[in-house]
Image (cartoon, rainbow, N blue to C red; front, side, top):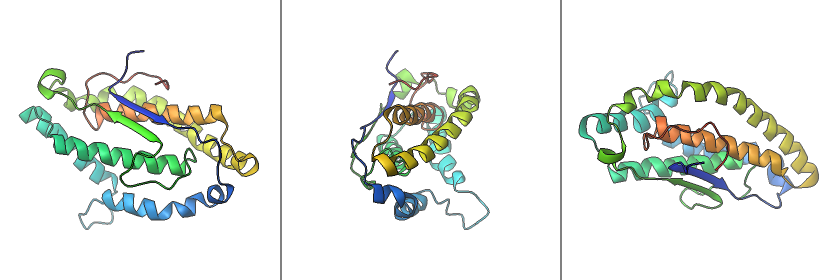
Length: 203
């Protein structure tokens, strides 16, 4: 399979702390508050969902820059990538894939690589206008997959409490689903590539 310009690997934990796993949702609250504050829409309207912030900061400004200026400023790209990495560390902690508390800046054991694009050579400036439509097949397939991720996490929570280990096959499934989602995000939200994401869990 051709290497996709957005990759995710997560180191498999050999052991888990049963106590922190049992209280994982409660322990996640502080870091979720931090992530939520970064995702706050800031319009002073409680009826506007936080997703509106993500749409504004990740999609719309980047789309406008690519379409009208054929540019993706490096600092803009760096911000989007670092926010993506942080959110994946938090997700990995909540989903029991990793057990060290998520860092706001260190890579830890969640390895994300997103290639910086040469906009003029690698990106079609009009593609961002239709990518949301092109990824609909991915979204349709990922919806039941995410239900599987939720069920896998619940089952893994019970297994870890008894055995202290996350079943490797389930771990690979959840990481594969996250990898798939990251590729779709890189294509349709981060807008870092025009290479269509593969329908695959594999690296």
